[in-house]
Length: 394
Image 1 (tube, rainbow, N blue to C red):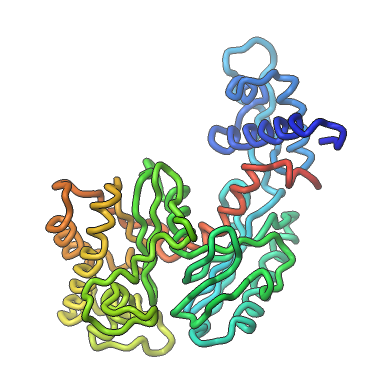
Image 2: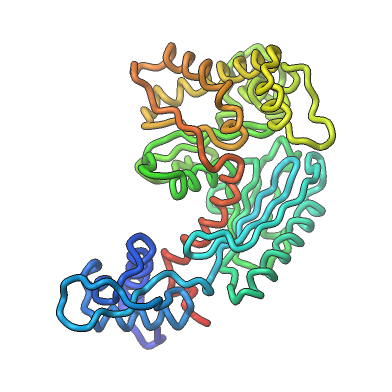
């Protein structure tokens, strides 16, 4: 786009570039003529847009497209590029760090993770270690001719809306940390709550037909939730919507790190369930693996602890279900691994406490604990589809 174009014409061209990208992403491979017909532009206009996107590596011509019945020779097929921009996603967990790269076609092109105890560690060393993983992933994709379009980081805490500031992450011990100021990365950066990114991953990748109105619940040490309404994430005024883990299920219960009492995560977080089951996560193994192994073997104490956790989840979710009337409740993160033992008591409490007799569908996520990391990476890749003009350069 030339600088001499009036602002409105630039905006129109940016919008049309995005229309072409989204059309190919959802319907491709397609010929130029088919793209033109689908978005209502002339073939000449679409060819100009496509040429720009091909030069930038966002689209690729992959061979002969199927005939659509029109006269003339069939055109070459357009598909999303394999060597253009990639989205870099990163996750800060209480006991791990992870980074991955996703191309515009949705394929994971590189991934790396490290087990590490991040609770109580100062943010600086944690983020320096994360930056090292980001560098390794960007070097790997760079060797394949790919270029990072940006970095999105999932964190287990409250992120102020429209900022990169972690206001509070109780299970890390962080407060008021601006990741943009601390994290050495060299890429356009966004930061979001892990439950939000897990919910977006479910919306984009969870299977067909994906619900458009759902509550996504995930758990590790803490419990997070995110609400999707009509296919859009509900963030709340400050960006803090979905703090299900700190909904009190027993107001006189034990003190929570958030300052409240009887919060859900004191009964259904991984560590809480381990305590109730009389177990410890020895040898650096993740709590969910220990719990699932014992539950699989029929350990009655573990199964009783999981039933209690499911019941607490049902109590906490009942208010949200009554208020929002979602199509589904999706269990993600470690909850997906433990679903066989959580669901009966969860469903029983929802049935007892919600107004709609049928209730929402209860769905176990296929993404599991990968949701936040994939959601982070895909959020960057989808930003390229939304505004390809910002990335259509070699």
